[in-house]
Length: 146
Image (spheres, rainbow, N blue to C red):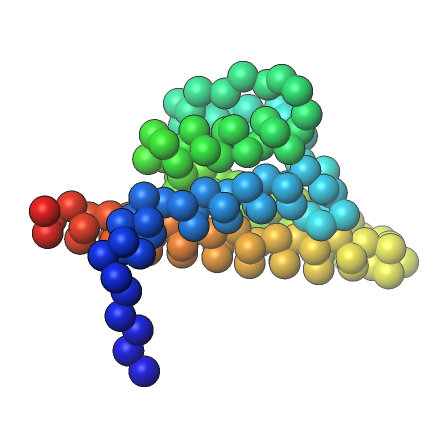
């Protein structure tokens, strides 16, 4: 089944609306440690932003800050690199928890939820990354056709 989109739908998709909605949902998830499997702090996200040259000013609440940083990375075409750094941070956390559970096997029952949530969060970030890449491709195709 081949889906055909109207020009208006293609313009909306190439404007990045779907990616922005996904970024807002990702920021909400990032601000909830129970959904991520560990606490993501403002300084950690600020460090990633500074490393990539993404303008970020921490203020208000964590979720708002995370959303603003993600949107700024999107606007400055650095979202892919930002999400890759976020994935690396998740990997580091998962390795730390795995090392802890291998050293102290009794902690596995207590910390297995963290590994499961981190895996789910990793999948969510990869999904947003794939969506962003499709957006970039669609944006390039749409601008070439003009």
